[in-house]
Length: 114
Length: 110
Image (cartoon, rainbow over all chains, first blue to last red; front, top):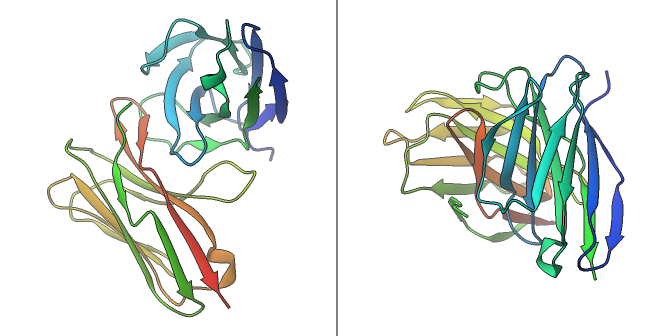
């Protein structure tokens, strides 16, 4: 039973570029959330996708956008990258968006912006 | 962004010692979670707490959901080397939006 898988594992981009990160949820899960974890900090909620729609959003600018596909996988897009966007980006999946099912996290994508 | 206040930030203990860490918030949460994160990996759920006052164990781990719903603690008994890592508390706001603490980094001297 595959858990949450994320790709790529590491990525280096230049300031101003755009990046797309990908996530496949755990088998049987239909809800995907994205978190940003800066070095030495706890993860910060970016947004949640369910039924191919953004359901909740944290305090992140519009440069951060996402998508969920019919197979429940998801993408996180970040435009006009800033140095401060360097972080570990975590994807988490669950069964349903309501909170009754625990979140399972992937191992993240380490994004470095130079 | 909002984060929970987690303490201590780091702990250095001897193998076999008990560990205690806690988490406080100015906001009420209806669910408290404790996660462990190892280097290069995502957080792994250790314990979930759903009711104020609830005390829940998972092996050598015990966690409690504070009566005020604004705090929680995690205890680890008889620590072993594989307990090393960063422990995060998290509260759930709304539908599965997790708010995390800053983490407690646990180091164990053999």
